Image (cartoon, rainbow, N blue to C red; front, side):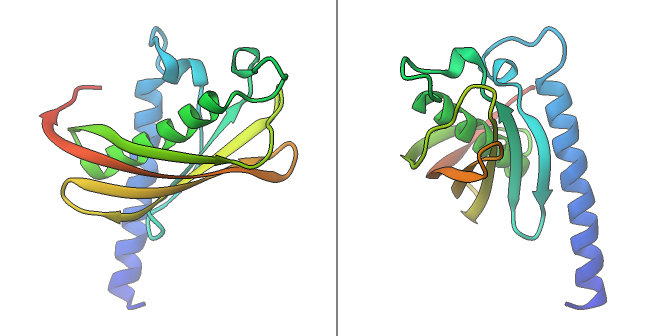
Length: 160
Protein backbone atom coordinates (compact mmCIF):
# COMPACT_ATOMS: atom_id res chain seq x y z
CA UNK A 1 0.00 0.00 0.00
CA UNK A 2 1.39 3.42 -0.94
CA UNK A 3 1.76 6.20 1.60
CA UNK A 4 -1.16 8.06 -0.01
CA UNK A 5 -3.37 4.96 0.17
CA UNK A 6 -2.36 4.40 3.78
CA UNK A 7 -3.30 7.98 4.69
CA UNK A 8 -6.62 7.58 2.85
CA UNK A 9 -7.26 4.40 4.81
CA UNK A 10 -6.46 6.10 8.14
CA UNK A 11 -8.66 9.10 7.32
CA UNK A 12 -11.49 6.84 6.18
CA UNK A 13 -11.22 4.77 9.37
CA UNK A 14 -11.36 7.87 11.60
CA UNK A 15 -14.35 9.27 9.69
CA UNK A 16 -16.16 5.92 9.87
CA UNK A 17 -15.60 5.66 13.64
CA UNK A 18 -16.86 9.23 14.14
CA UNK A 19 -19.90 8.50 11.95
CA UNK A 20 -20.94 5.45 14.02
CA UNK A 21 -20.30 7.21 17.32
CA UNK A 22 -22.57 10.09 16.24
CA UNK A 23 -25.19 7.73 14.78
CA UNK A 24 -25.38 5.65 17.96
CA UNK A 25 -25.64 8.80 20.11
CA UNK A 26 -28.51 10.06 17.94
CA UNK A 27 -30.43 6.80 17.74
CA UNK A 28 -30.01 5.96 21.43
CA UNK A 29 -30.58 9.49 22.80
CA UNK A 30 -32.82 9.88 25.84
CA UNK A 31 -36.47 9.82 24.90
CA UNK A 32 -36.03 7.69 21.76
CA UNK A 33 -38.58 4.90 21.50
CA UNK A 34 -38.98 1.76 19.41
CA UNK A 35 -37.09 -1.45 18.87
CA UNK A 36 -33.59 -0.03 18.36
CA UNK A 37 -33.36 1.68 21.78
CA UNK A 38 -34.96 -1.42 23.34
CA UNK A 39 -32.26 -3.63 21.74
CA UNK A 40 -29.69 -1.19 23.18
CA UNK A 41 -26.82 -1.87 20.75
CA UNK A 42 -23.28 -1.01 21.80
CA UNK A 43 -20.65 0.04 19.27
CA UNK A 44 -17.67 -2.33 19.32
CA UNK A 45 -15.71 -1.66 16.12
CA UNK A 46 -15.82 -0.74 12.48
CA UNK A 47 -13.28 -1.38 9.75
CA UNK A 48 -13.09 0.99 6.80
CA UNK A 49 -11.00 -1.34 4.63
CA UNK A 50 -13.14 -4.37 5.40
CA UNK A 51 -16.40 -2.35 5.14
CA UNK A 52 -17.63 -3.83 8.41
CA UNK A 53 -19.43 -2.87 11.60
CA UNK A 54 -19.54 -4.81 14.88
CA UNK A 55 -22.15 -4.19 17.58
CA UNK A 56 -22.96 -5.94 20.85
CA UNK A 57 -26.32 -6.68 22.45
CA UNK A 58 -27.20 -8.13 25.84
CA UNK A 59 -29.90 -10.81 25.80
CA UNK A 60 -32.77 -9.42 27.90
CA UNK A 61 -35.75 -11.30 29.32
CA UNK A 62 -38.08 -9.99 26.60
CA UNK A 63 -35.82 -11.66 23.96
CA UNK A 64 -36.25 -15.16 25.41
CA UNK A 65 -38.66 -17.74 23.96
CA UNK A 66 -40.59 -20.38 25.99
CA UNK A 67 -37.55 -22.71 25.80
CA UNK A 68 -35.54 -20.04 27.68
CA UNK A 69 -33.26 -19.34 24.71
CA UNK A 70 -32.80 -16.33 22.45
CA UNK A 71 -35.83 -15.95 20.18
CA UNK A 72 -34.81 -16.19 16.52
CA UNK A 73 -36.68 -13.00 15.69
CA UNK A 74 -34.65 -11.10 18.28
CA UNK A 75 -31.43 -12.39 16.71
CA UNK A 76 -32.65 -11.32 13.26
CA UNK A 77 -33.50 -7.88 14.72
CA UNK A 78 -29.93 -7.60 16.01
CA UNK A 79 -28.65 -8.51 12.56
CA UNK A 80 -31.06 -6.20 10.75
CA UNK A 81 -30.10 -3.25 12.93
CA UNK A 82 -26.38 -3.85 12.47
CA UNK A 83 -26.90 -4.18 8.72
CA UNK A 84 -29.05 -1.06 8.72
CA UNK A 85 -26.45 1.04 10.53
CA UNK A 86 -23.76 -0.09 8.09
CA UNK A 87 -26.04 0.65 5.14
CA UNK A 88 -26.72 4.15 6.51
CA UNK A 89 -22.96 4.75 6.43
CA UNK A 90 -22.92 4.10 2.68
CA UNK A 91 -26.29 5.77 2.02
CA UNK A 92 -25.56 9.06 3.76
CA UNK A 93 -28.82 10.95 4.26
CA UNK A 94 -30.87 8.66 1.99
CA UNK A 95 -33.62 6.38 3.22
CA UNK A 96 -32.85 2.65 3.20
CA UNK A 97 -34.95 -0.49 3.10
CA UNK A 98 -34.22 -4.15 3.73
CA UNK A 99 -34.89 -6.14 0.54
CA UNK A 100 -34.19 -9.59 1.94
CA UNK A 101 -32.58 -11.22 4.93
CA UNK A 102 -31.82 -14.86 5.63
CA UNK A 103 -30.49 -16.33 8.83
CA UNK A 104 -29.13 -19.67 9.89
CA UNK A 105 -29.42 -20.42 13.60
CA UNK A 106 -26.53 -22.60 14.77
CA UNK A 107 -26.62 -22.55 18.58
CA UNK A 108 -28.86 -21.02 21.25
CA UNK A 109 -28.15 -17.75 23.01
CA UNK A 110 -29.20 -17.46 26.65
CA UNK A 111 -30.48 -14.82 29.05
CA UNK A 112 -27.84 -12.20 29.90
CA UNK A 113 -25.41 -13.47 27.22
CA UNK A 114 -23.48 -10.81 25.31
CA UNK A 115 -24.11 -11.20 21.59
CA UNK A 116 -21.66 -9.70 19.07
CA UNK A 117 -22.96 -9.09 15.55
CA UNK A 118 -20.53 -8.33 12.75
CA UNK A 119 -21.86 -7.13 9.40
CA UNK A 120 -19.61 -6.88 6.35
CA UNK A 121 -20.53 -5.33 3.01
CA UNK A 122 -19.73 -7.90 0.33
CA UNK A 123 -20.69 -5.47 -2.44
CA UNK A 124 -22.26 -2.05 -2.65
CA UNK A 125 -23.38 0.02 -5.54
CA UNK A 126 -25.45 3.14 -5.96
CA UNK A 127 -28.71 1.46 -4.93
CA UNK A 128 -28.06 -2.10 -3.69
CA UNK A 129 -25.82 -3.28 -0.85
CA UNK A 130 -25.24 -6.99 -0.20
CA UNK A 131 -23.90 -8.00 3.20
CA UNK A 132 -23.09 -11.02 5.29
CA UNK A 133 -23.23 -11.31 9.04
CA UNK A 134 -21.97 -13.41 11.89
CA UNK A 135 -23.64 -13.69 15.29
CA UNK A 136 -21.17 -14.61 18.00
CA UNK A 137 -22.06 -15.32 21.63
CA UNK A 138 -19.21 -13.74 23.61
CA UNK A 139 -20.40 -15.30 26.87
CA UNK A 140 -20.38 -18.85 25.49
CA UNK A 141 -17.44 -18.21 23.10
CA UNK A 142 -19.29 -19.69 20.10
CA UNK A 143 -20.78 -18.58 16.78
CA UNK A 144 -24.56 -18.92 17.09
CA UNK A 145 -25.75 -17.65 13.72
CA UNK A 146 -24.89 -16.62 10.16
CA UNK A 147 -26.80 -14.38 7.77
CA UNK A 148 -26.97 -12.67 4.40
CA UNK A 149 -28.97 -9.61 3.41
CA UNK A 150 -29.60 -7.08 0.68
CA UNK A 151 -30.57 -3.47 1.28
CA UNK A 152 -31.78 -0.80 -1.12
CA UNK A 153 -30.82 2.87 -0.96
CA UNK A 154 -33.82 5.01 -1.94
CA UNK A 155 -33.91 8.56 -3.31
CA UNK A 156 -35.96 9.80 -0.33
CA UNK A 157 -33.96 11.63 2.33
CA UNK A 158 -34.20 10.63 5.98
CA UNK A 159 -33.89 12.77 9.10
CA UNK A 160 -32.64 10.83 12.11
